[in-house]
Length: 152
Image 1: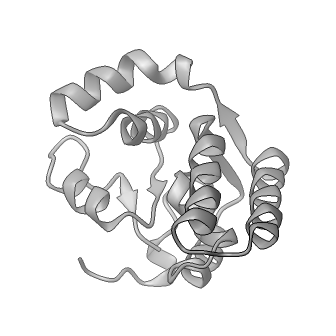
Image 2 (image 1 turned 120 degrees about the horizontal axis):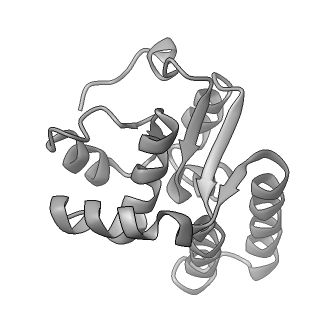
């Protein structure tokens, strides 16, 4: 995938949808941490789907159980991530998006969790900031979704 120039990350809108991978990368050890932090400074508003809470919680769990991170450190990172979501992001309920996400997911063979973020971005006429390269590549191979995801 081509690297985007920093100013190319900002959509024509001042809002961006943050998926769970982008949020988690800010608070948990991740190679994309600094790139995501820089990328979000180009936007005035953020949106996400409520499943981001559970998915970030899953990242915290993995950091302890699979990667042997100290539980105290992961708990602090989880609290910071949850506080960041609550204080800075417009959280949309997944049930509001579920029907469209199901339709999009089954039509385009995209998992429902990812489809929720994609549908939200389509509704807001903006993009999804993600660190998931596989998702970005898949979405960019689908004509009706091409360009809706961006990597930091």
